[in-house]
Length: 352
Image 1 (cartoon, rainbow, N blue to C red):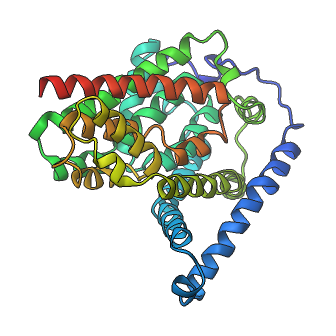
Image 2 (tube, rainbow, N blue to C red):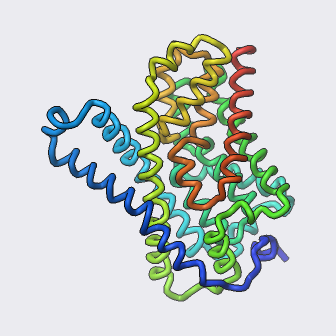
């Protein structure tokens, strides 16, 4: 009679443990909290003392503040939207409603999950809390990771913006869409093949999943939603500020002119654009227009590699992923995605 409920498929035992909440709370209020406070202070100085921009701060500091703030302003709405959607999925969608429409075959299930991103206009920042909500609902790490990698490339705003920027010229749009689907399912297959995928998660978050899977739904859903929003915000926001600061620091340290100078080389141009994508940390909803400014200098394969790797791996995204996954998963994800995007870019530079 219908599909099996998700709790039977997930490698999380049902027993509830609550001992992990105090460490998580302490972690979110110490190091990342101090970074958040520092960035807020700098933001206040920048906004309320405009004269300091020319009189007291060196140009490199001004550039750092401008870049860091722009990354935060660009990403913040999508992070909040992702948190809200994760709450809807975890708290408000009835148990079994999503699972009944998904295939029972593991490969087919992940393939369909990778296409669900077409229903959510959320960039990579918002997909991290949404993927967390899927795992707390009972989806396996492999399924959540498949969605996490595919959704920033396959969501409707990204497809429309890429079409507006490049159209069908140079095969950039279709290769980006197909490449996003393939790399998402490749990463999902690798995670599923892991002997214990739950080991790729941070212990505190794995404990939250064990507590959530199979737990009865509370009657006070609004109160539960508010508590969930507060907890996810406390986890995501410090990581967003840390990632924005790192992205700004790298951009200040690495001159963009150095990257542009090697744009005509079919091999080095791919490496340069991938490096650029991982450092500028653009939202995937607008990265196509940024890449368009390099179209006259860089080869089509280089642009495509930029558009594939950027939404999956950049310094801001790594900081957000670190709230959920262990370092070993981040290394695995980075290696697989860099090799895949690099191979796609090189093949396109030879054939197109």
